[in-house]
Amino acid sequence: MVGRLRQLHEDAEDPNVERMPADNEIYAALLYAERHASALRRIAVESQKQAALHRVELWEYLRERAEIHQAQAVVDARAAGVEWSQLAPALAVSAPSAAYNKAKRLRAASLSDARPQQVRLRRTPEAVAAAESRLAKEMAVEQRAQSAAQQRHRLVFPAAQSLVSQRDGLLLDEDAEYWLDEVEAVLPSCDTPTQMISLGRYLGAAVRALRKLEQHTAEPVAMTEEARAALAAAASVIPLEG
Image (cartoon, rainbow, N blue to C red; front, side):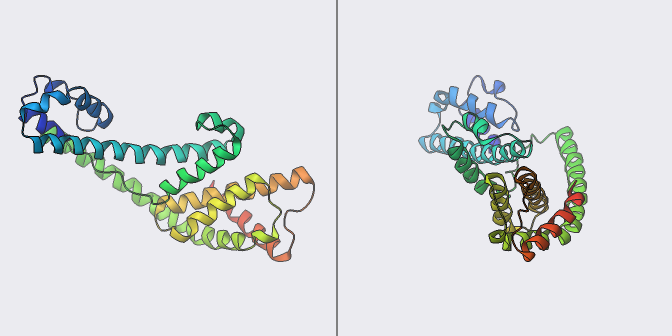
């Protein structure tokens, strides 16, 4: 789409079009198009509308990707022990509870596991060869990750289902409740390698939060025999997620 935007600037004989960043530098290319929008006055009104729509679509794409990556950053921060009170200013909210709610909204955007929109390449032999090489490497990495994720998933999925089904028999604090919510949210649509890996991470974080709570209270967090069995089963698959 950046390529189409570039073509419209070329059609308008934009004198600075050579300064427009490469097609894979979407953010920088959009800033250029914004600064040089007046150059499009030389082309038909319909073409000007199309250029503006391309900019809107590309900004929307960047916004969606930013939310997905910010959601993962929050998950990583929580896994590293960052408190909600510390995340609040980073998420531009005023309270820990607001940070928790915003994190949940961000996670909803990432659960779809949408693939990034393909960026149009310059059609030079070098660019095509580089793209083909990069694609081959990405496919090999993805295939290995998918195979490994599917093997772990056969153990992790039933353990996660069991633990979620027994949450009423568990003593929960904020951390444990958060991670069990994450497990429960991803279970219904756990089909892709990324979602499978995420499920293992969330289950591990939930078990660690429950064990930490046990150490803090010096009391068992599992209040029923079924809950104890579910927690033990979940804990047994966590080393496989290492």
